[in-house]
Length: 155
Image (cartoon, rainbow, N blue to C red; front, side, top):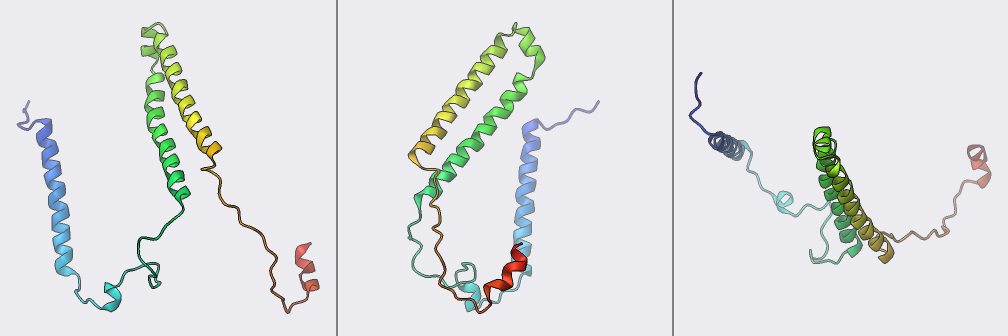
């Protein structure tokens, strides 16, 4: 049997060097091939095709930030729940510890979920999850089409 000369770290190093080489060659080839014709439109800031107004230091509603943080918190919860479920499903480990492992794991997970539920209840109580509801106002638009023309579509 042939023994490899590289260790596992050497194999990883070769893959990393290959990836860096691949990306570098791609970027250099793209810079050589692409057309270089700058004009006013290409050099302007793109913002949905509209002219920018004001500075980038505008204020935004902090609720967007809070909701994003709460979303990330519950996404991180999934990262912890999945490996727990995989380990908790190991029948040999549970029976090998005379079900002590099962009780420990389930208690630990309920404490974890309880702490997260407390955090959610706190955010809900503080009103971080409430959105400003739009106010329905009557329109002052007068349609030239009579109201009776819409009757056959309403029924």
